[in-house]
View 1 (cartoon, rainbow, N blue to C red):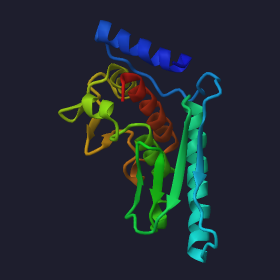
View 2: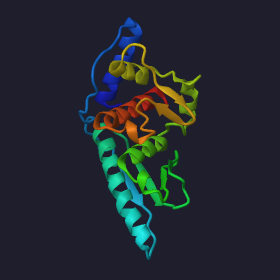
View 3: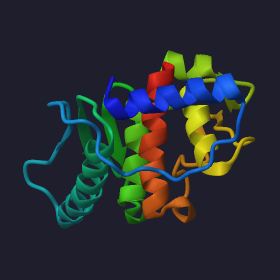
Length: 195
């Protein structure tokens, strides 16, 4: 467990003990150094078409940005395999570390890559996630305490249909630098809860 995650867990314990409102902002301090890192590989055609070359460039930019953000904020050792598959309607990530982007260039962006990365580490894809998503609300204390520290004492992480909100980055209008950092912090807290 990273020092930052220990602080999140301690915050959850303090919240449960005091039932007090926590008010604050997200810290963008990087996780304590450890050699863990998310890496990724894009599977490419031997003789790519112009469409594939364009998609590869866009996907590479999106994934590089998303992985850099995850590595700056979360201490996790995981390898992703990424594909360009035009038949995929938007993009999709699975617990086995596979992310597939479809032909729609609107989804070849950092927001989508961040969102799909969360699926590869368990959001909406692991048994632990489904066990903690109870009646549409996340039941884990660490993520709950974290979202309350941002949004007030009654804030909660909503979940369902393999997604979370707020900070799930489900739609373009949810993307901002702050929300992207909070997304990664929230995913880390959900992992600590047992996602």
